[in-house]
Amino acid sequence: MNLPLRLLPLCLALTVVVPPSSALAQGAAPPRPAAALPSPAQVQASTAEAKRLSEAFVAVADRASPSVVQIDVTARDEKADVLARFFGHGSGDEPVARGMGSGVVLSPDGAILTNNHVVEEALTINVRLRDGRTLPARLVGRDPATDLAVIKIEATGLPAAKFADSSAARVGEWVVAIGSPFGLGYTVTAGVLSAKGRGGLGMNAIEDYLQTDASINPGNSGGPLCNLQGEVLGINTMIVGRGQGIGFAVPSNMAQSVAGQILRTGHVSRAWLGVGVQDVTPDLAAAMKLPSASGALVNNVADDGPAFRANIRPGDVIVSLAGHPVTDAHDLVRQTIEAAAGQSLALEIVRKGGHYGARATLVERPERPVAATPAQMPVQPHQGLGLVVRDLAASQVSQLGLGSRPLPIVTQVVPGSVADREGLKAGDVIVECNGVADPTSAQVADAARSGGILVRVKRGDAFFYAAVRK
Image (cartoon, rainbow, N blue to C red; front, top):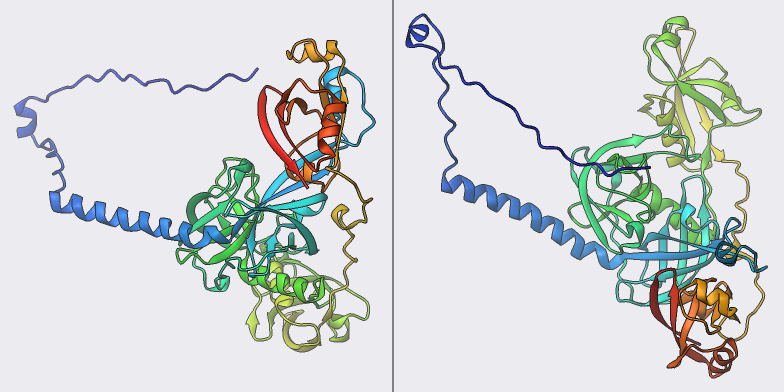
């Protein structure tokens, strides 16, 4: 059993010993004078500085928030069956789980950038805009290697985000994260840019993250990390634990490149050198008689790839690419994918103590085709409101504390239907329909034939209204 933590007051018994005057005369240091209180002018200056910083954060929220959206998805839930939980048996309907994330408006015509992991298992995708509208979205394309995806809604005149140059970002500068952690839309948190070029986390094939201590939680995924000009510096992607103060974002330069390719072609292509590399550790440098523990150590070369044709072999250390120093393996990967397929680049190689030059023509990186998501699969057309109900027995209603009259329970919500977009779920109990209390499932079905119903629903211990209309 988890117990709440409490802060216990710490009481210290202090004994004050006053030295005799003779001790002072024998060389003991006199007591230190109390620190002077700040002057009114100093207090006023400090307050003004704090207010300027506060106004800077307010300005970021005002500029960036209109371009941030909340993304609601439904997905298959193989582990849950609501009726089975309530009554000990299954309904035969496919359970549907819900998730959420955030996104950034790319263009006024409804293109939105988010994380791949937000939408990759989605049956349906809906976008909530800052003006209160909820619109269905389709998946344009996704890039699992960087955990990015682009979705599209049918809209015009949306406020597109402005992107910063992430290569110019400085470690230590203030940053602001905006998103919907735990479904709490348009939450703003602040911190600093803790580090750049983070990789080796093992979460994605391509990792070149910005690290921040701005508070990021589930639901922030796909939302922006902004600078104090309100520009998008990165796309928030993941955290290390919860409450640890360590979050990671895909840099804006990489995010823009990936999003641009998806919008143009529906997929992403990257340059490839055709080598496997690792960091040069001090032990490896000593064993291989290398001048320093820097560069990218080649541990594998793809047959007939660009590196093989450039006479690069295992054991070589790549110390520069296109005139830029290579500090480690991650640095080589980052520099390579920033180049273009077909580009010829000069390399500097250390081999058995000697320095050699080489030139390799990059090719497109071989990658597996990105599989279609459930949202991209053809679905059976559905009629009506997309809602299936049946009557509960009086004994079942009594278990729910709703009296003894039969009541209709939702057994299925068709993904993508109007009932799904209004948030109805399997297991919801309808206690009122179009002003009629304690309706039967037949009454709900009759009312739905008119093209819309207003229902009052009990879910767990909560009640709410939903207007379900075509």
